[in-house]
Each structure stands twice: as C-alpha cells, then as structure tokens.
Amino acid sequence: MLGVWRKGRRRSRVVGGLALVLVVAAAAAGWLLTRGTQSAVATTTTATVSTETVRDTVTVSGTIEPAATADLDFAVSGTVTRVLVEAGDTVKVGDALARVDDTALVATRRAALATLEAAVAQRDEDEDDGADDTRLAADQTAVLAARSALTAARDDVDAATLRATIRGTVTAVGLEKGDVTGSSAGASGASGGSSATGGTATETGASAFSIVSTGRFVLDATVAAADADQVSDGLQAEITVTGVADTVYGTVSEVGRVAETSSSGAAVFAVSVDVTGTRDDLYAGTTADATVIVQQLPDVLTVSTAALQSDGETTYVEKVGDSGTERTHVEIGDTYGATTQVVSGLAEGDVVEVPGFTRGPGATGTGGGGDGTDNQQRPQFDGTFPGGGAGFPGAGPGGTP
Image (cartoon, rainbow, N blue to C red; front, side, top):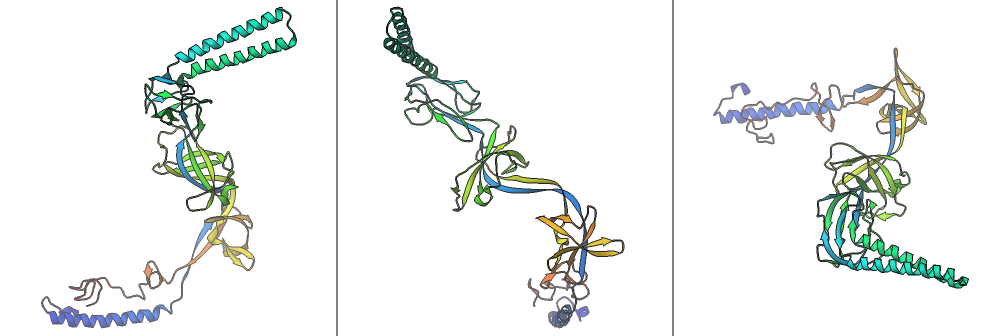
C-alpha cells in the first residue's frame, strides 16, 4: 500500500497511514508479549587482585588567607611628620613606615638620663660617707627607678618611628601627615593567619598600617565535629582551591579545641592548614577544600568490591583458573570504595570473576523499564516514512496522525 502512495494523493496517504498504524500496533503488541518471556542473560567480567596504597582522609573547608598579617599603630603620642609608604608597597621587617614629632620624647629622654646620673652620684656619695643600710637601700632603689625610666624614654624615642614587623605588602594606610596619634602601652606585632595589633590608634580609631605576608598563605577552615578527633597537627593535606587547576599541598598547623557553630547550625572545629612553599597563584578570600590524610597504608592487598559475594556469614569470590571458576572463601578488611582489603584467601595476581547481568540478549541501550534494546524482539522504526513528521504519514512530533 505504501508503494502506491503519490504526492497529492491525500486520501491514499491517510489510508496508507491507517494501515501502517494497524501493522505497527500488532508488531508492538507481539513484542510486549514476547519480551516478558525472555530470561535475563548473565554477563561477567574479571578483576585482578593487586596491591595499592590506601588512605583514610577527612575533608575540611574554608578560605585562603595570608599566612601572617600585622595591624600596626604608634605606641607613643605625637603629630605625624612623615608617612613613608603607601598601599601596595612591599616592605621587609624593620622598614620605616611613618614618623611622629619626637621633640618632647627626646627631651624626656634627656631628663631621664640626668635623673639617673644624679641618683648614681647620690648613692656613691652616701657610700663614701658611710651611710646606714636603710639609706643605701633607698639610694639603690632610686638608681633602679631612674634606669628603668631612661630605658622607657629611649624606647619611646625609637617608637617615634613606626616600623614593619613582617615582610609583606602594605594593604592599608590609616593616617597622613599632621594626624595626631594617641598613647597606650604595648608593642606592635604580627601573628600567623590573623591580625595582631599593639600600641596606639590614630584619632580615627583605625590602624595606622595593615600589612599582609606576600606569597605565603594559610587555609582557615572548619571540620565537622564527628571528624575533629582524627585531625591533628602535622598531618599532610591536599588543597583544592577555587580557580586553581593544580593541587595545592599543605600541613595542618592548628586544630581548635572549642566547638563553633557553622552557618547551618552544626558543631564544627577550626582547623588551620599552612600552604607549602611560596605561591603567586593564590589570593586571600578564595574558597578551598582540603583533603587531610589521616592515615596512609602502602601495599594493601585489595580486590574489586563488586567481586565479593556472601553465603550466610561467609564471604567468597569466584576465582578464575585454567579449568574454570572455583568458589574461594576470603577474609576481608576495610572497604575503600571500589576496592576492599583482602586479609586472606587470595594472592596478588589472582583473577576473580565480577558478576553482572543485563536485561536481555544484545542489550545495549535504554528502554522498556530497563537497560537494553533487543533487535530480535523489538520492532525498529527509523522515521523514513514519506511525509511523516516522526515516522507516521501526516504525524506531528508525537508520531500520531
């Protein structure tokens, strides 16, 4: 009937399509009836028992931060006379950043020196005069106090010049010439992975200078409470950094002892991982995950986990030999995803059978509630009917007229 179809013969086309529908329906019904009677055909593959290095790992997540930062302020009062660096400058330890007017500080130092000299002279005079012990003790106390005051005065003069405490890049300058600094005890400093301030702040309350280490980084991360007891200082880590193709390596340097609460409300512990070496491809604030290697075991005998079968409480494999397969009982240890440790029963190089099955003979595709297409059972429609949208004459995309 299809052979007599011609362009423009609308009726013949419809009649031919109807006939085809009946033929296809019959074929499909026959396939549906026969497909249920076909048994699944078992297929197998093999796997070789081998040794490998296995690892137990814990994952931590966080952000990349500079290994060291320093927020520095003047430790003395005074008016800023010079600012010697600006944001973006690279500095090393001891470089001058800014200075304040030290006129009053120098005067205080001179006065302290004079006081010390007078105290020493008085003590020497009293000793020469044979003063009693009480007097000499008072003289000695005065000398010590004067010497301490002179040391402090000298330190204040030195502190009139603010200097870098770490090597790195200046990221912020919080003062300018003419600003007046406050006064406070303490010294400026730095710490790994977090800011450390000391001394005084400017009138605005902001740090005078902020410096971050260059090329050295740390991963500030958290670990789930359930895994925290497995992580300790010194463990090696492989870090995956957003935007960086290569694996970055590091070492756990610190694990928090007090639980924190994550954004999801779960308990976590802080973990710091020092990045190995100097890097020019990392940036502060970038997110990263780290795989911390908790344990690494070399030369572990393993077999494909899929090859393992059980019979009650017994685990066995089908070992492949020259004359076929032989059920072999095995003792297994830990499972590492696709492989499982073999404690006994197999040796390196043994070949075992990995069972599997498909839905039917020749199954290669998808359909009918399972994987596979059966060229012998399923009618094939290739969409070559004349004028048909999806195979049937006059049909649209859905394949029905």
